[in-house]
Image 1 (cartoon, one colour):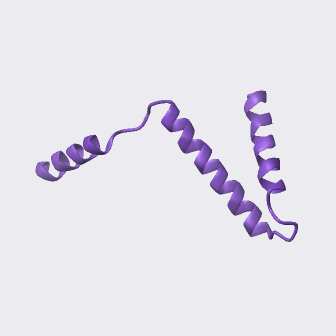
Image 2 (tube, one colour):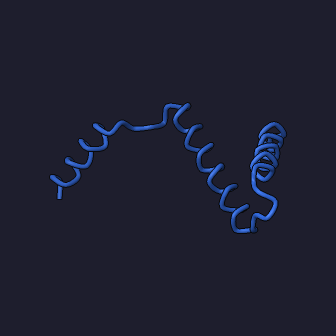
Length: 68
């Protein structure tokens, strides 16, 4: 396993948990960790240029609908 990625995830989890109030429930902890992971995943996707623009999606949608 990538040690840097593992350490980074561990740090992010601790940072997220430390930002919660002392009385946070397990559900809140898990929800916040889930949301943070999704945001970081989305940002990584955006930085790697794997996103498709709205105009491209609309054009592909039109082509798909016209083909059927």
